[in-house]
Image (tube, rainbow, N blue to C red; front, side):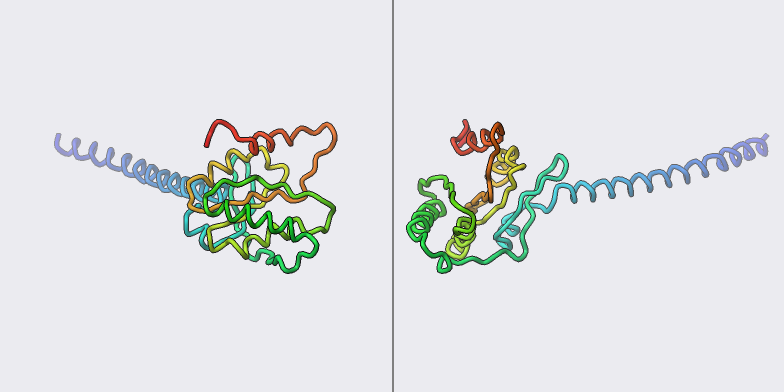
Length: 193
């Protein structure tokens, strides 16, 4: 009787071991799948934003990747200087005064620079970094198609001790296009401070 019992035990042991090995292999595979999924999510979301991230980089582009948006650092930003801008000195003076108030935490105005192509509008905005980056100013370029993500962008930036200029270059709207309303709503201000 004891011999039969040992045979049954050996038989069960032989059936259980392959199942345990298969289960172990399945868990190892699932663990690897989860690691890969986590890596992909991190790529989609972009770099982790931190104070150090903004200390190391001055200029960024907003990139929408599927459902997630992220700030991508511009590693070699254009270095413009106010000394290169001729004939727009009063505009530059107003822009600098307004930006100085902004970085110091005082009241400021939103700025819309407009005019003919090549008159120094974009260069003036980029030149602000040379004067105010050491005071915490950072520049973020946003494409026209990303205007709908302004609330998400602003929420992303809200908790960092920097001052961000949101730069939308070559913004224009065709007749009948209503995307400007999103921009207007943001500039006018909503219910949040």
